[in-house]
Image (tube, rainbow, N blue to C red):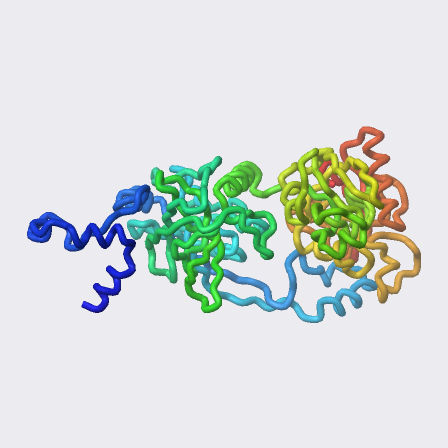
Length: 490
């Protein structure tokens, strides 16, 4: 009795009035619900029809993961094939071989095609060696990764089955018109319990989080917990408006603050993963920060709008376009830039190789700079480039970061010649053609290399001559050989 009274006392006044004035005969009608209450205008009497319709498209994901401990990603130095003069230095940098840890990752996902394509979170399947997908009817199938995008936390899978099955699927809303207060329904696999549905409203839109600058999250209060990651958030018309990704929780459980990747962002990432298996983002080659009160005052700016350039990657697109430290970028292709995160998102949405116009404030003068964007390097390489790594930050070429060999102390080089490969993207052309960390680039286009500028000049000359590739002389423990690297992949 106490709990019922307490529940009623929390209802709106209009609902109380309806309960108190309901005809007595209604309670005696066997077909009437046991309890009655007013339903707010616009709210569904039940979510059952919606959940029944979309649930077959929602899956549970069980991934066996193996991840290295104590060493960041990328291709590990090849100690056996490394020139002796480099081995000692790299052994000091990587004193222990990475140890592996094994575990399980539980998450959610949803079909977006009858052929078995599944959207989920990258963190659900990252470092997975085996992925099993459980359907709503209990059937289980292995799945393969088509592509992932860690920066937005989106992954695309496909069921690995020889059976001719048409799977129930749902649609990503490519132009959502979500407002704060709209009803949403989340379906997923919290704590491994299987198909679970919850409902709530959109609490905020365009929410920025420090852990992810590429997403303007939807904040929802539909309860989501661990295991809901990668599951869908539906609008009342049954379209996916968000991909559940994170929760804010001091306790580890739901406190009514969840974050979903907007469906239009997810759809763009999925399109690229379907087409190429990867996401290509524009890259300017700068480190930026927000324009704070102190920075604005120090620069004599009237407001805090824009992105403040704190450093520039040597040899990168910004360096070649004439950007300088302490520049404030205020617009991209005529569109205003509000913050550093805003600039990162805008540049990231533009394809590599595109010429972009930037409005810049420099020493109280507004200037216009034009830069041809590069292809954003892998995060591990980017961190090394921006933090300086073993030397001052250098440029990335063909998926590898190089530094002058004589600048790496302890290598014992006798001659001022060559560029040592410090980091290498696993999926790059250079890696595919057998180059490894610790290899030395001696020549490019027939020109001796002593600095990064030499390599850039050789590439520029090859392009001016109309060549589609450049020959690079590489030295390692096996000797010297020439490797042709395609110029459009620089």
